[in-house]
Image 1: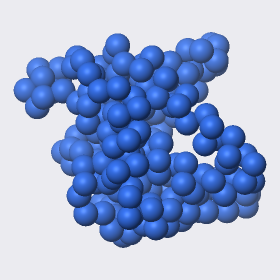
Image 2 (image 1 turned 180 degrees about the vertical axis):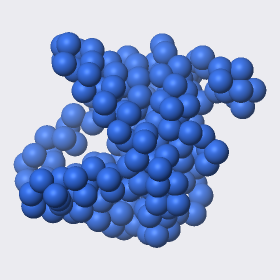
Image 3 (image 1 turned 90 degrees about the horizontal axis):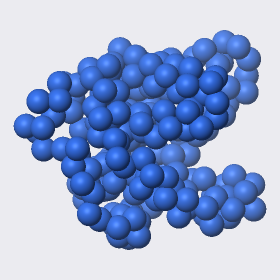
Image 4 (image 1 turned 120 degrees about the vertical axis):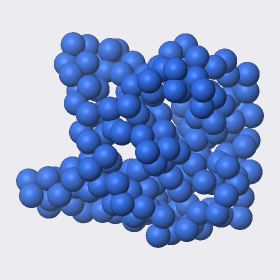
Length: 203
């Protein structure tokens, strides 16, 4: 486990800097992702099933875009669909992540929240390592988040004011909140990511 020495306010500052001048692309990919989610899930049972299949690849693509932002690299709108190149892995990761969180949540809300934090790095890991399997990404996320769950919780709480603005704007603010939070989490991932040798030993 790698210690995270970067303060949360600095991670947020890095996210703002990474998004400066690129909010248009960030909002565009977020809009398409959220629009597909809302439309498909509002249709019927078939729509929900379609979204369940598409959610994994699209989430992998979206996190790949935001990870590129956090690293100051080039991100393109079409990168949102990169997850379809690893369709089975993305669907498997989404299914297992949701399954573990739901199972823990059936016990109590708190265990469910802890599970959500434990597996929160899964899609960043997959985006960062094209050779990683779904199960391994979940394991690595759980290991990576050991000792860091409270810090991530505090980071997310720092966006509470933005969340209120989102409510006031009838959800429109999500188009800016999702990129801001996701790029900050990508910076968080970069901060706690173990060295390659440590990853090999863990596996």
